[in-house]
Length: 179
Image (cartoon, rainbow, N blue to C red; front, top):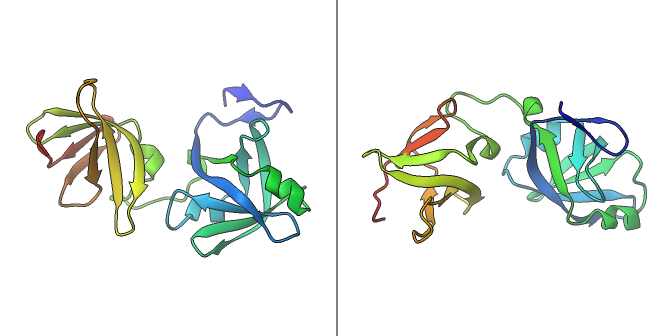
């Protein structure tokens, strides 16, 4: 814990953005969250979230559930639609230390962002700047170090991802410089 928010509450230093408030849900103050993960496990299991609107602050989750591809939640202290609607666009953060455990071959997107990417020949391709989903699989968005080079989109599937080494902060891929 390295910082405090306006109310003096310690802000965890491992906050990861897991989604954003998409709008209000119903008339009783529920919010609709667009998660960055298809299964939204962290949102559903962690009972304290952090929102960055109007300023970074913690909120307790009274109740939440999946609704279509979104998560709908009742937050403590928010009891009407207008207040819920005012949170639209707020980023939702959860401490990574509170994420549900994964198996050895699974990763949270937040763990991959910022890792260096190199191919099997040891050639640097850039750094993971973002992740996205096209439905069937996740995709790494790689931003190269050279200004003239174009970004790369690499599917996060076994055919291309050879090794993820979180300790070395590196992903090895089967991907040519000319792809």
